[in-house]
Length: 208
Image 1 (cartoon, rainbow, N blue to C red):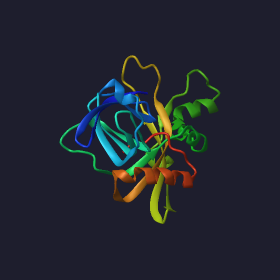
Image 2: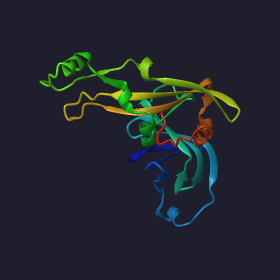
Image 3: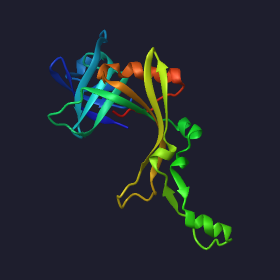
């Protein structure tokens, strides 16, 4: 994965290349890469990607003319506009191990007509799957982490591609969600990311 675009640092626009772990800045002059500098901390640095989406880097250590080390990041799902992202009221996490403990297969069941044919020993057709209502497989709990009461939700994300080039039936995976009673500031992302370790789940992605 490579994300490119421009970030705003102290009112100055800088081109960046992000590989998912660190932000590499395009050098203004070749010599700017030769001398190490001390890092300057920013709670958040905002920018716009080359696909015209807002991106926020959280918990940043900025090394002028070189790179930005980040603790987390958020990218918008829509094109940039007049309404900017200023906070969040939920966090979604997904990791392969979640699929083992809460199988994405819970979101589907074999259609009733095929079950009847099985009882009749009729194997003349391939079984079809139907989607289970969300309420039947979604699980919610209230927990306390860091002295704060948070509602957690375990559910399944299912998507279907209509593109002709896609040959797979659909994508599904388990999603672990934190639901907050009050809207949070973007700079609090890193704190809640670390809360996940207390619960025993490591996050691979964030979606606001």
